[in-house]
Amino acid sequence: MALDFGKLEKLHIVAYRKPDYSLTSIAAPPFFALINPETYTYKYKIEFCDTQAPGTSGVNLKFNKMPPQEFNFDFLFDSTGVIQSIFPLALPVTEQLDIFRHSILQYQGDIHRPYYLKIHWGTLLFKGVLTAMDIEFKLFSPDGSPIRAIARCSFKGSIEENLRLALENRMSPDITHQRIMKKSDRLPLMVKDIYDDQRHYIDVARFNNLDSFRRIADGTEIKLPPVQ
Image 1 (cartoon, helix red, strand yellow):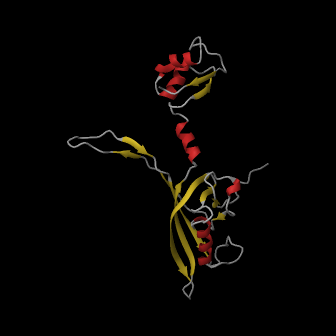
Image 2 (image 1 turned 180 degrees about the vertical axis):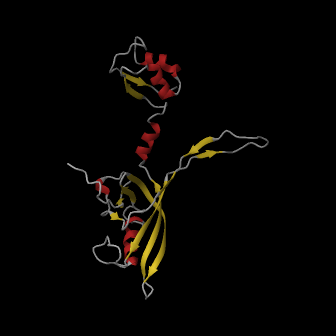
């Protein structure tokens, strides 16, 4: 089957009622962009505690947290007739904006918050919530009605709590890990990868009732317990 590399894919947003982004929690049909954005921006931040004692010349920055990533892009709305509309009827720009706001911005009484959102476009897949939207009206009809507008949208990433805990803990030395030995594996290196210190390999070998840490059969399950 030949791939159609020339097919135009439109950026679209899907709204969800639940933070697990499950198919059963989809709230409405996808909202498609009229025109794909020329650019979009990701912003990542890491926050450190930089409290410095009086009389000192420097400080060892200590990790505090990683705020959610931020994502920004612009949506175009148009009723000039120059651009083919994404709506089945030729709706005024104000009505297009009302539909957009209801889809992604408006407070939803059944879930007591706005929807969770998933943004798709090509390789882009962003999960989060809308945090701000600035609307700039660009063109007007003779009677003063807006016929073109740009909605500048800002989003922040949102992750389900169970998934966040799993991602944060998957390499933590404070939980039990399981590994399957392969021919290329070495127990001291495996231990260092988990604990950031290979000195515990003797304890790990003893915990797993191994006769030798050098000769471990391929396929052996190794448990790496929490550091005490």
